[in-house]
Image (cartoon, rainbow, N blue to C red; front, top):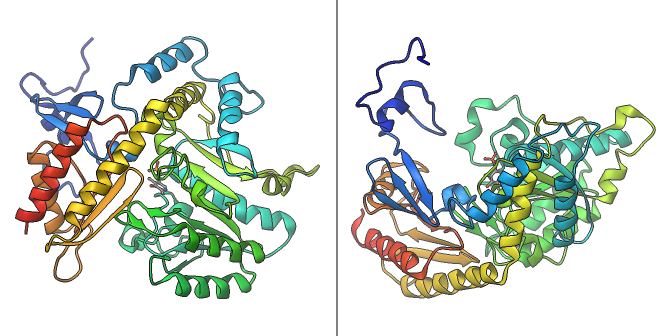
Length: 435
Ligand SMILES: *Cc1c(COP(=O)(O)O)cnc(C)c1O
């Protein structure tokens, strides 16, 4: 079979062929270098078309804790694909979704009773925000605004984008967004200010929900704050009828040392958004979870009170099977041991680096380590210094995506101590050399 208008492909590399038709995320194609074509992955390693090896030090954007080409998940997917690959979730149900719910609910913070499936982190957030807004609409109460944290990232669909606080990501779309007020992040020294601002907003009665990335703001550069600070914010929301949405798309499934970051909290959120590592980095899938109280706000004889949301691939059985297999891996003693081992290694590296004259701060939570390189002035998210760091890491065969002057490591949990040391050595070298 010969495709009519195909260019001759003979000697062209994948890198070159990519340029013809493909559009990449957050990429200025006029100035971006060619994309590295990965042909194979195994464990924490990836190989490109020239055979060069890379350590995946960020678990491919935080989705892959159990290693690339994991055969345990692959077998589960294959079995599901050859039993029931997909069936519509409107009017029908299936065991993989039921099982996944039965296994997830006991792991969630107390009170989470209902699961709504979708396809990715942004849609999980979209569903949560829509549910909060429609809950109050159904009640006839005028609460149309949302509270979020500064520098938050909640995804790129419209409500998720509105909640995001990294302004250059969202500037072009202002005017078409849900009304969101951003409050200070309760990092050390700003806890009281954040609390005061939140209190004033909550007291207006205009806000339906407060959304946050619990304990670690991923895309902001792994900005970290304490559970106690968040507990106080959640308590204020509870007192004022403002629902709390824990966006655990990044922090979920072990990254902070507990299964969910909300596990570090005394006060539990009303909704949770899960995606990324849910399926071990194999199949796009997400879940939004709810308390019974929120579900009851839609439970009515009136059909117009249903949650007006749905996706074609909702609760895709193959995705559910991948998520079930991923949970088996996460809950194994071996994986829990891996998480503790990475944390210990991170803490040792933090101790080594935190007083380095070129280091501004090192912070660790669970398997996440962030190191801020001391620089004059404020760094651009995708600025020149960041690009020099990125290129240096790539030249050393390590995939790290610094945010401005912040280098963070979030490796697959199965990474060996040797590979981890290799990453630390190269980061240390970058701190010394890259200016
Ligand atoms: C990545 C991310 C999202 C968006 O997920 P997508 O699958 O990219 O749509 C939302 N929230 C948080 C906290 C994230 O890290």
